[in-house]
Image (cartoon, rainbow, N blue to C red):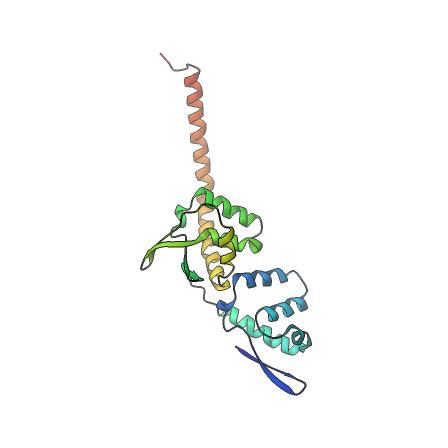
Length: 213
């Protein structure tokens, strides 16, 4: 998207992002961090991050021009694609979202839970690196991803290149899964705990000779 800025009688054209898909996860995180600060600083950093307008010129823009640019950016965000893309490509490598979240392992869920409790805003690359892993086999829409080994440091850096649009649709999808899963998980844990207690009681009685001939 082009934006014309007139300064000292001369007009120059600069570039804004064309769609929200142009915004990477890394840029989006930096924008989220700004929301706790002043509105003027938020506007300055947002325009600097999502355009090629020189920072010096941004500070010299009129409030009216800033408002117009921010409105254009808000319109782009409101038109973002909310359809979940389960296989994405970054630097020539395909990464697939966990094909079946119902089969997620306890280790994966524990790490996800840790990242969420530690602050979703700053741990989004880590969360995405758990949910998205290299595709090792694919046929049409069916695919298999690499097993989870907990080593996500490098992949988390790669996930920063995901588009904010992809991340938001993934978070929405995952949020709905967690809501449903949280209704099952407590009762599942209670059942498993009760079974374990019964097992321990039986083993204790047997070891003590109770019930033996």
